[in-house]
Length: 104
Length: 77
Image (cartoon, rainbow over all chains, first blue to last red; front, side, top):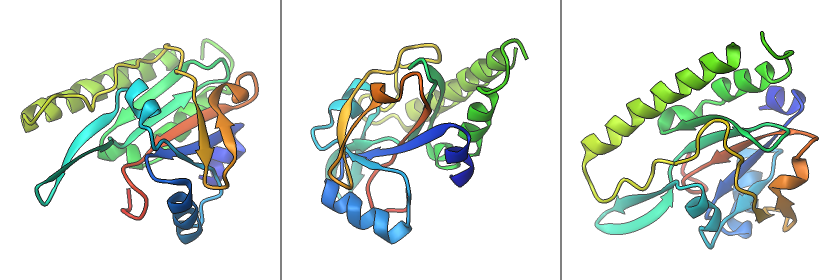
């Protein structure tokens, strides 16, 4: 993560937790990047990544684990979903690639 | 060229994941994003854990942004 932040890149964590829960979570795991609160699920809906979960018979809609890399022009350069999205290495390699001149 | 390879790799990954979801066969397949490489990321303003407003488009022209969507705080994911 520190590597990512050094490569001209910011990381934003997003979930539907409250800012207070995110503050406690950030302190617990020691993250340095912002954790954003999408309690209305507006962004999760706009990005199309709400997923139904069934926890002991109770049904919820939460975010699917997703990593999206947005370049400096605001365009999406990389989308990764599912459990592999937990590993930041592929996002890192995309960001490193964005620094290279075009056509390489 | 590298971007092209990345795009193709992402596409295969998405297809593989799509297969996984339909195999699970439960409810609507709403977890799969329609956003693709090359699309403009929908803008948003959200409140951070420090109660600051963070707007995606504020980073435009300055920084690449990695959006890391996670399921819930305190769940290790």
